[in-house]
Amino acid sequence: DGGITQSPKYLFRKEGQNVTLSCEQNLNHDAMYWYRQDPGQGLRLIYYSQIVNDFQKGDIAEGYSVSREKKESFPLTVTSAQKNPTAFYLCASKPTGGFSGYTFGSGTRLTVV
Amino acid sequence: KQEVTQIPAALSVPEGENLVLNCSFTDSAIYNLQWFRQDPGKGLTSLLLIQSSQREQTSGRLNASLDKSSGRSTLYIAASQPGDSATYLCAVDKVREGQKLVFGQGTRLTINP
Image (cartoon, rainbow over all chains, first blue to last red; front, side, top):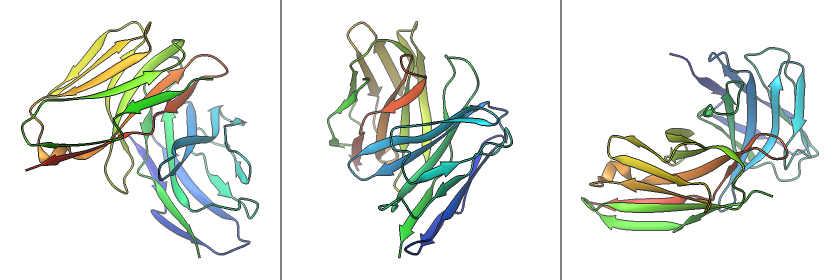
């Protein structure tokens, strides 16, 4: 079955470390997105990519970086510049075109230790 | 700037009741409105997608309506069951300033046996 795979499910980061969250999709979707979810704040957009080798900042991009070298993959790196990285991270994808819905992965919970 | 509001923030009802969740948005320039379900610690499951030209969509015991001119959507759940307990998220796929999904903060629903 087609879908989005996020790994790992749980991730622990030490102070000053960079960590990378994986997002892979086999839906043949062109656009991919990263969201952050904090209790009481809803989902906020970090980065998105509508085509390979191109991506744009979302509302809270500071302290994060992404790459889009393959259509299927959109990894998110949480850098040491992100001062409060503990959160639930969700990856999504959608086909090109305005009227299609979004598909989400199962999420990665990142905790600073 | 598109803003999405969901009321109520939490709802607890006995099993078997019909219930309505509300969603409002400030900018009517949208492609779609999508309702999601989220179980604790899990990703988002798409329930219903309403395109901007549509008025409602139905899936089983769920019915979602869209009034784009007034910036409102409702999710109607018939004959509620304990398994319906989850957080329900409303999101609009906005047109202006780049196509992006903007979320409300969700309604946490508890169905009591």
